[in-house]
Length: 281
Image 1 (cartoon, rainbow, N blue to C red):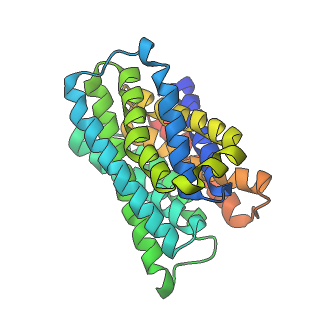
Image 2 (image 1 turned 45 degrees about the vertical axis):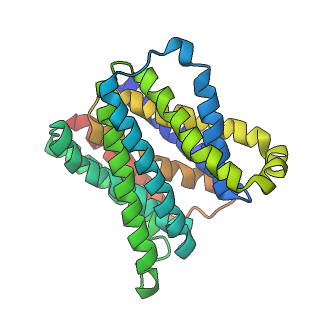
């Protein structure tokens, strides 16, 4: 993987952290998430003149990805219902690259070096460390832990699906735009309809952040899918999940959250892991 490609994925991770921070700071997180997906899908409409329709072989992957994303949203919401975001999300995002490594071997026939694998393990360990800021899980945290792990499975599943889908599409931009428009219709519009009584007031108060969040969301995952078209899936997945660490940095800077020794340790681990992954690639 070239340094330019690595930088592109880290920019995508920063964009991912940014739109998640927007959702986190909103009053209605599910409605905010839905509206950001609607904006992202609407933006993709303007890209249609520049994107050919993905090949027919990619459509099953698109349909499966949409369904897997629904599973991801459900398990993440359940995790937030029984646990804290700062615990559930790092567990989910930290475990996903580990599953992707195995999945890429089975479904994409991708093998990685021992050094690269060590880098992935360190990155994942650093991300999971963020979820242990309050200490090891006790008997009251097994439900949040379970949903965090389940969410990680959903993340790895849709990551592998989209990596294979874009490789079958014959046109990366066509696959990306199709996916975001499907997400906007099947998830965004449905949640907006369910929350229609709150919709007008929420949009009028938050339209600037929603617009920025939609642009960031489209750019974040769009760049990841584009890069997975021609790069090792496991490395891309691990680099993408550094967004959790970036979100912690954003939270400390903008949301005045504490940045203690655990977050510092996680940041160092992730940085070391990134270096090892690129050395071994």
